[in-house]
Length: 312
Image 1 (cartoon, rainbow, N blue to C red):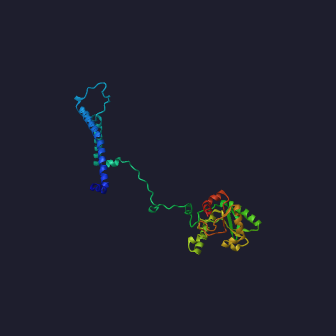
Image 2 (image 1 turned 90 degrees about the vertical axis):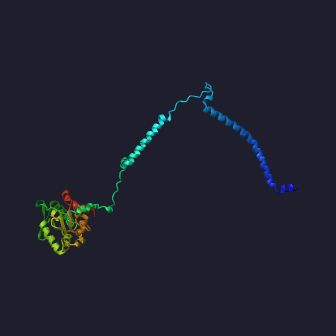
Image 3 (image 1 turned 120 degrees about the vertical axis):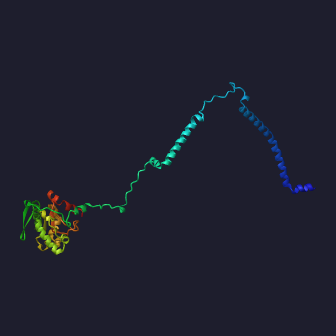
C-alpha cells in the first residue's frame, strides 16, 4: 500500500524516470552498430596510411592500378621563390632610398598646378575704368572743346548787326540765308547777332565774364575760353528775334516766336542747338546759340561735341 501511495504522490517523477530508461535503451540500441562501423573505418584508414608511409608494403604497380600521369609543376625553389625574393629586395631598396632622401619622393609625385586665384577687388589697386564720355571731356577746358580759327578765304559777309559786320563760313552763311528767307515768309524775323569771332576778340569777352562772375570756371558757364569757342570756326552763330530785340542773348529768348520756329525747322537747313538744357559739357543753356552741321566738313569739326550731345 505504501508503494502505491508513493507512486500516486510522485506520479510525475516516476513517469520521467520511466521515460529516461526507455530513451537510454533506444540510444544504446542505435549506438552500438554505429561505433563498430566507425572503428572498422578507422582501422582501414590506418592501414592505408601505413601503406603510404611504407612503400615496401604497397603492391607493385600494374596497368590496372597505375595512377594517371600529371605534368610536372615548377618547384618553389626554381621559379616562385626567386621572383618573390627579388621583388621584396627591390621594394626594400626603394623604401630605404626614399627614407634616406625625402626629396626623392617629392620629385616623383605628380606636379599639381596651383589654381590661379583672382585677387579680391578690395585688396588690389585696380585702375579706375574711364568711360568714353570721360575720355572725350578730358579734351575740354571747363567743358569747351578747342577749335581752330577759320581762314578769311572761307568767310563771307553776312551784313551788319548794329555797328558790326558779321561773317560766317560760306557753307553756314548760305544755309542761314535760305532759312531766314523761309522763316520770313512765315512771319518770323531771324536776326544774325554774332557769327565768326577771332581768338583775340574771344579773349576780351571772356575776361569781361571773369570780372562779372569772379573766376574762369564761373565765366566758362556763359562764355568759352579763347581758343575754345565754336564761333572761331565760322559755323556757329547767335540768333535773335527781330520782333523782340530786347531779348537778344537772354534766356527769355526761349519764349520768342523765333526760338519756337528754330526748334521745329532749323534741322531742315543743317542747324542744331549747341548747348541744350542739362548738356553733358556743363555749359549753361543758350537758346540763341546754334551751329551748322549740314556738311561733311562741319560734321568733322563738331564730331566730339556732337557725340556728347546725342548721349543726353
